[in-house]
Image 1 (cartoon, rainbow, N blue to C red):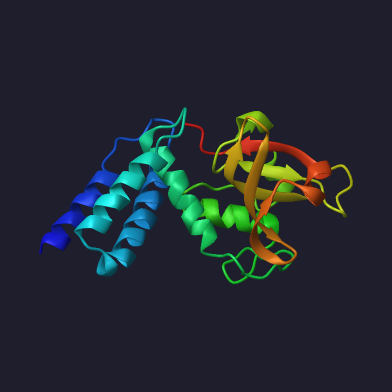
Image 2 (image 1 turned 90 degrees about the vertical axis):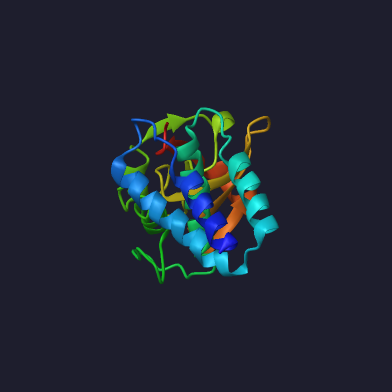
Length: 201
């Protein structure tokens, strides 16, 4: 019974923060559902100390400069959701969840949290707000050219970590080898186009 009480408290704590007015009710509703499911899936393995540690980590993850606590938690959960699909195959035009192309992957992940963005990488590059590479944060979309796109946008991924001092970052994306996390190096260095922020507040 104590474990159930702690789980309930964790859910209330995670989902009870009043969202910034800029964050849509639809997005918050989708976020609450995903976050509650993630906690529910883990509860059978939880004891009091694990739950306490989880809540401490939860607070630290939400401490992202410029974001409300609710949006910061949403981004954390969005990345957890994105990582669920690592290894899924790349198929041109596929929108998930069994297979993805790059923009199909990003639009699918964001859709789970109530954000409707285009399934086209070129159109995604016009959505949200523009972000400098030295100001990237988790959840931002990063864009690249591809071998077939010439100088135009041809590839997109989601930032999972960023070092603004150096401009380096890691991103999760549907590459031709499947969904994976990559570093901003090698092939991608000369192909970087820019970044957009979908969750802004």
